[in-house]
Length: 168
Image 1 (tube, one colour):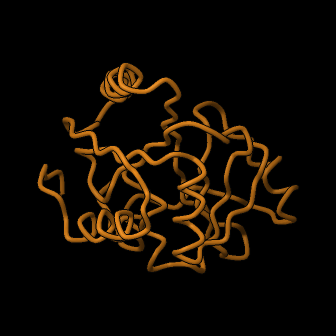
Image 2: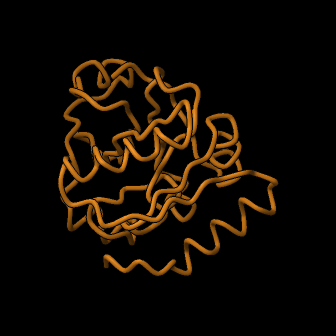
Image 3: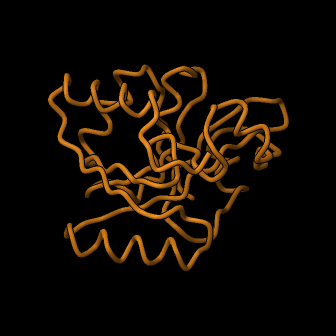
């Protein structure tokens, strides 16, 4: 699913953002399949905005089977530090096939916007990300949709997602 056409879910998201009065920036680009391609997209976004954040999104499961969506700044992830903060053990990445099936997104697009149909999956938000235009894939990996930090928190509240701030 690497189509450049907007999906129905993307159109619904854009409609909801508009109805909430939330400004956004939709940036069309080639499919991101390598780190180098991702770096080129980030460089292009940085030319458009002064404070751009393109976080890493990881779907995790703990030893008890509870799912979490971790949204963090790029860099090493300290799972043991997150486990201690949550009071859980055994955090691991969910496999790509399960992520794709569960969130109904293509590989590489673990977007928090997909949690509108899964409010039971809490968002673990890297506390170092607190400002700027924050970009996520809008249900496809050929575009990035940016929303300002404060407005993004409104979106999460609207979709009834629980956000827990963590050190990563």
